[in-house]
Every structure is written in C-alpha cells, then in structure tokens.
Length: 318
Image (cartoon, rainbow, N blue to C red; front, side):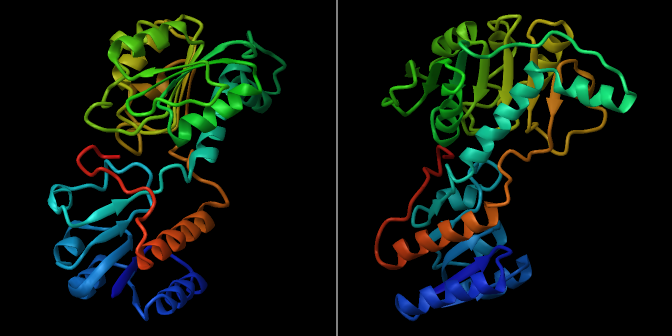
C-alpha cells in the first residue's frame, strides 16, 4: 500500500510514519509538498494524510481513506470527493477543543472586565475604567455540544454558571450541564433569551449558515454577550453589526469571520464592544505535536484493520 503525506511534518515525524508503515505491513510512505508532486504520485495511493486537493484526489483512483488536519470541513469537501462513496474522510474534531475554549473565554473575560479599554489607556497613560461585569452565577448558552462545547462548559463550572445547550445529534450530557435540547429554531430562541452569554460550538453547514441572524440576536438580553470561535458564516455579520451599533447586546467576540481575512472596509471593524482576533482559537504550542500523534494513531488503526477515528458523514459535512 502507498500512503501519501501532504502536510509540513518534520523529518523526524516523516521517518516515524515510515517506520510505522513498514512495521505494519511493509507499506510505502510518499512525502509531497506541493500539488504537482501530489498529482504525480497519486495514481496508486490508497491513503492521503493532510491536504487533499481536487486535482490530487482525481488522480488517485485507488484512494480509500483521507485524514484531514482540520476539524471544520466546509472549506475542504468538494463535490467529486463527496460522491466517491468508496473514500472515507476523517477529521480532527475535538483535537483543538481545549485551546478553542480558552480563546472563547479569553474574549468573554476581556469584554466583561473592560480589558481592551485598559490596554488602550495604558498607551495614553490614562487611569480610567468603565462598568465591569461579574459572570459568576450567570447562564451560559452553548450552540452545539461536541468537543468545543464540552470544553467551554467545563470552564463555565468554575464560574458556577447554569449551562444550557442545544445539539442536533447528542442526547446525553454531563451532570454539570443543566439542560440539553434538540437544535430546533424554537429551542435556539429559548436558549438565546435565557442566556447571559451565548457561545457557538457547532460546525458550519448548510443548516448552520447564518444560524444566528437578526431574529436570533433580537432574542438576546441587552446585557448579554455573543462569542463565536468556531466558524465564520454561522453569525450574520450585518445583523450583528447593527445590534452592536444600536446597543441591543452588551458585546461580542469573534475569532472567525465569513470571509478571511476580514476586509478593511468591513463595518465590523467599527462596531462598538466587539473584539476580533484573526482565527487563532485553535492554535497552541502543542498543535503540531497533537496533529502528528493523532495522524499516527489513526494510521495505525487503518493499517491494522480498525475503523479510523472521526470518520465524517461527507454529505452532512461533519
């Protein structure tokens, strides 16, 4: 079997893949670092680990399994690979959940404790503050209860928060989550009405595109905050800009936008009580190691006849 590595692994990591492949059946690892090279070697490849571009997949008639480095798949799935029923795809859902949750809480705490103002005032040597908000005892609403949602909820426990969640698939919940309901529009609106903080923790799919629009934002308390660190496109940005400009919610934190990088003429830049970070929630010093270890674990499963972890439903997108 030939296995293609198409990801910037180190020489030591590439050798570890080769050692594993040889040990488990004398399989061959092919490392490529550009699309042209990928196409050239794709004809008899059964596995791709990393990038899977349309042209490379089209040149790989024997392809059976792809391991993506991404948790969200909306930017990677394309019609031809979706229709190839013989090809299964695994993502890394949950791998970046802890750092993503940390980032969500960083945005929230920065908003509630007026940290952007403090940073700005330090440069001006100005001793000034505005009203700060206590989160302890409040209500957190989670839109999605997968890896990101669970990690966000774990951190909410330290603030003694009531935790509400909706999810389209999950029906079991940890004891520290107060309420879990199906992801209907009615339940979404109810969650947004009752929450002091709403955090998105769902993938971007056809069903979740602009899931949070004007009607949903209108349900929120004037004192409530919205945090989105999962995928741009879940939140309707013009609708969010409008409610922030009108002071209809207390603030918002975004690590993702519908188009990235965010255009310089986007009204979001000038929206009040909004913090924007450049899609860094999934980043950490551990990420390269975690990707390598997960790829190794899943490759071992595949080569020993076990089903890989995190196989997605390509038509659902997650």
